[in-house]
Figure 1 (cartoon, rainbow, N blue to C red):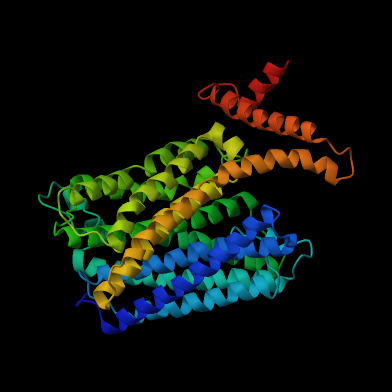
Figure 2: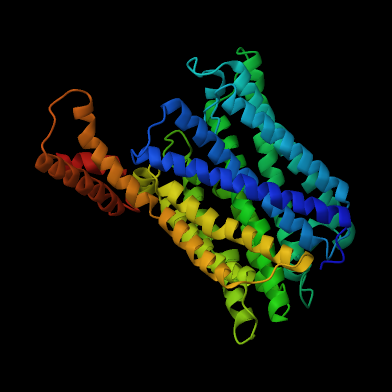
Length: 489
């Protein structure tokens, strides 16, 4: 039992985990409904599909952040005295914001997706009224405000105990040659999340407030490209940081099980500092298809996407291997999930790095490659860590014991999310089949089975040619599209 945590905070962590569990199940049901609709096993209207998609996308990131917050607070309490009232305020504002978002989607038919790209909320082609957009954007503001209060409080506490966020990130060891080890890993990760997520929330609050003003008074506008930058700076960073909160459980629990401290040496601190900087810069890999974005920003998006995935991921995965090696630790549900989540993190991040390559991105970004990477990253990385923490929490604070069926459920869980990782392949096939179906659906000539097969193969080969011919022009001074035109002549 963690004796350092305040009893009221311990109960609040239980509320966080209970809500996380319920919403995770609901989000899985939404995901299965969308897949069954795409697979033509059921049929729902496009309006309902996009409403469910909006709830699924927004809900998964939000609930991962709530679960990650529970982990961060629980373990940080071992090193820093924390006021439970702040965690309660965060929880109440979270529920308030979620209620407003759900009302917007299921009462007022808001269905723009989590991206709410300006000026879509104000110009919905009469799909929904202003009330839906106002509820959704205001609900997101309330959610963000709750997390911003939490991070400002944590920043004040780390400053009081460690002398500032820089020292909490080990700057005196990295830059001033101080000997020894840095603060505990939980403190280092918390400092990183405070800096990156606070920046993301301020960017999100700016575009949300501007969109609300635009709905109320359409004469007040903002630059759509600037709005897109702010939206992805908010969304990508916030989603990315869910794993940096959840990974605190890996450091703390594996260290406790093996009875070996996870020391924050200089390499560990440099890795976390690099990720702090790179995480703020890489959102531009979502804008690689926007021709109006300056070229230097696109290059930053590609180069730092390569760099960002490696430092913390490598030191954590390598550290997990080393701390477990010959430790004779007793494996249970929690330690098994934490260990396997390292694989999920790597398996989910590598497709993101591939997609950040500009010529690959031009072909793959608007396919299910991106949801495929994100589901692997989220399901086998972040959510695996959160579920592992739920087990650990029930074991240390309650009377949970490992049973044989728990091992089976771990295997079943990873098979499920491994299947989700095949989404990109499914999408590619669906895409090419749709090229065949569309003319028939429009009343044109209905192709025979052999013609359908030939058209399908033709579409598949076309995609392969686009990918590999695009890769040949990496580093070329001539744009890929121009090279294609020259080749066709």
